[in-house]
Each structure stands twice: as C-alpha cells, then as structure tokens.
Image 1 (tube, protein in one colour):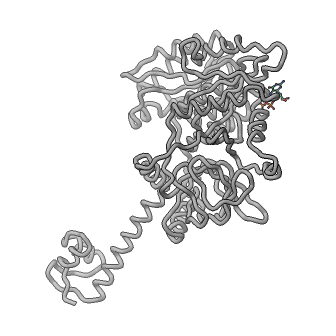
Image 2 (image 1 turned 30 degrees about the horizontal axis):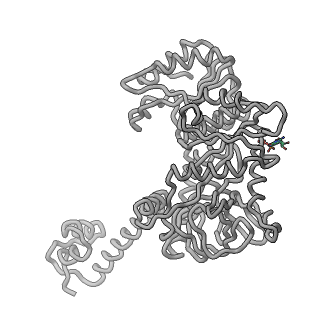
Image 3 (image 1 turned 30 degrees about the vertical axis):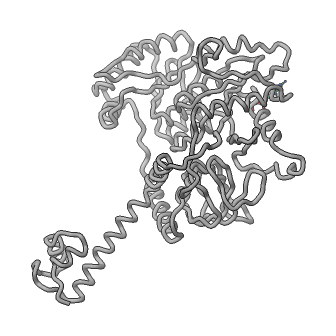
Length: 483
Ligand code: GDP
C-alpha cells in the first residue's frame, strides 16, 4: 500500500508521533516514514475506529447533556411559539386540591367526549377560549419536590389552594416554601367561598406574612376567591393563570427533535411499558426513536388526555406512549434520537451505568462535608431546613443562624416550623441540597428512613449555642467529627 505513519496521521487527524506510539503499543516497531503493510493499517484503523465509537458512546450516553443541548437549541431557535403553562396545584390537606382538579378536568369536556375523560395520564389540558393550560394531576408539594429532586423542573406556575374557612395551615407553608425554593410563581386560590364563615380577608392577611402580597396592597401576587365545589370564579382563576403565563413569556420550539419528562409510568398487561410524558420542546411523533431514562424504543402508540390516539404531540402536551423496552421512572427525561440503533445503544449503555450508580450512594451536603462542598461547588449560601419544638425556639434559632457569615457565605433557612421533622422536610432538603437541623424535636420514623436512603443529613440539638457553634465550625472546616 505504501502508506506510512505520516500519511495515516493526516487521514486520522492525529500526530504521526502518536501513530508510531500506538503501533508500538500494539507491538509493531516502525518510524514515521516507513511504509506499513495492509494488516498493520487495518489493525490501526480498527483501533482508532473503536476509540472513535467509544467516544461517541460516552458523549451520547450522557442523556442529560443531549437533553440540555436540545433545550438550548430550542431556546435559541428563531421560530419559538407560545406554549401552554404547566400548573401544579398545592395546599393543605382537605383544602380542595382534588375537587378543583376534578372540576377543571370536567369543564373541558364536551358532551360527546364524556366517555373519554376517565383517561388518567398524569396530566391534562384545559381549553380556555383558544388557549390551553396543562395541569399536573398529582397535587401537593411531595410530588412536586420529588420531581425536582430528580432534576425535573416542569411546573411553571403553582396554584396554592387555601380554604377560606380554615386559613393558613402547616402544609400551606410547606407548599409556599417548596414553590419558592423552586422559584416558581404562586397564584393564590382562596377556596370554599361558598361555606358560611368563609373569611378571605383573614387568609390574605395570613399569607402576606409569607410575602404573598396581593396587587391591592402593592404586591404582585394574584389572588382569586373561588369555590371548587360550586365552580364559582373558577373561570376567573383560569384567566389569571393565562395572565401569569403571559408575564412569564413561556415559549417553545415545536420544530425540532422532542424532549420531555416522564410524569408517570407503569407496566400494562396488554401493552407493555406505558409512560405518561409531558413534551417540553419540539414535536414528538409516532415512530420517533427515543431514549427515556434508562429505557429505549420507538413511540408506537401515542394517546392524548381524552384517550384519543394522536400522531404527534407539541410542547406542554401530556401524552401516553407505548413502545419502550422497559418501564422508566417518573422525572426521567425523554430524548429523541436520529435512529433506533443509536437509541438502543444509548439506552443499553445507560441501563448498565444505572446499575453501577445504584451501588454508589449519592452524596448530599452534610455538616461533615460542608466545608469541602462549599469550596468545590463555590456555594454562596448554606441552605438549612429548621424544625423546633415551639415557635419561639424556631425564631430564636433562625435569627442566630442567619447571622452566621463565613468568608461571604451565609446561612439561608429555606423552611422552618414547629413540629417533628417530617417527610416533606426531608424531600425539600433533598431537592435543595440542604441539611436539616432539629431543636428538641426528632424525625418521624418515615422521615428518618427516607433521610437515610436519600443521604439527607439530620442534626438534632437541645442547646441553641451548640447548634450555632457546629454550623459555624462546619463552615470554617473546623467541625470536630462525631462518632
Ligand atoms: P384535598 O385534600 O386538598 O385534595 O381536598 P379535597 O378536594 O379532597 O376536598 C376536601 C373536602 O372539602 C371534600 O369533602 C370536598 O368536597 C370539600 N370541598 C372542596 N372544595 C370545596 C368548596 O369549594 N366548597 C365546599 N363547601 N367544600 C369543598
């Protein structure tokens, strides 16, 4: 053939010296000018081809990067269009979240469709005039923060339901803190206006303490008084959601490969793995080769929230798909690939990586690793969830903790309250990379085991200055280890 290491270097875009070295490793002694035989060239080609393949593999099996690339591409696209807002309903138990979701689901159905409405696909859309709103069907902040903890930030707007006859309750505050921590705007829906004794003014005053200031008082939080039961003012609430959506200028690019997030997934006896997907960018088509979390396949059948088969799905549209080789998890990302072969190899690589990762525990920020984490992640704030036995202690501790400052890094209490450390506290801490301080309180049994599985650090104290000292010392990297 007459090719030497220099010629090959040009073809392979490598330095000739590297080729010579590579050949040496393969047991072939040569120099840059010596011509090489066919077998040697083939060996070398195979070697580089494998490397090239491995490199490609490494790149694309990091699905988060592909997802981010497509998300970025969408943000920079010229033909972005308005997309429907995605809404999560939160609030204290029994304040009317489910009733509101049910009412909204039904406002949307015309008579002849009534049969299809039983479809539960994790989310549904409501039509208001000529616009759409997407509602996530799982209310509450636990689902919201679980998704967030796994990297899925799909909610654009939170509707906070507060019963007019009950007012602000512990889970109302939790919901506010979860939404704020995620930087998602809140619309307040004061519910149960039909109940005698409904006192929306009192609720508003309570909520203002949490910085939800209505426009009448110079703030920018939208308040709507509704009755989920009678339907009073629910239309107004929908209009306000659209108004808030306009302020947020929610846009997407439907003209590209789709990305999305799994809202729910399950194994169906007749249809195999089924995943409820919220499309975020691009348009998803039947037949698209996809990777979803650690699974792969092709979109076989796509069904909308009315149980009707559709051929494509645009941004903010919830759909149910079949065609995956396995059941993904909620919050998993969906990415469309060029061809099925690539989707398969990426999916398989991810499945084996996942096994590997499952063995290594995820490391959250703890009091012990705080100093190192602060340096490594260039933290500006140390996030803490604070629980104490009585409100007085909460306030005393919060004030002292918030005064701590070490080399420009401050303490930020993302949630505080009186009472035992519960699952919601652990979920919030996990999602926000925070740790938990308990003063004269303990975690509930479920919160304790959840914290253990998720690697969330809980520290219990009964002396205020000890808590302050520990946090200060940890931020300085001078905490004495406890055994
Ligand atoms: P969730 O726990 O927040 O999902 O609350 P639910 O939607 O299950 O509602 C709790 C109770 O309050 C149920 O008995 C509902 O019928 C009732 N409820 C919900 N909304 C209203 C309302 O606007 N007015 C009245 N009178 N009752 C309501």
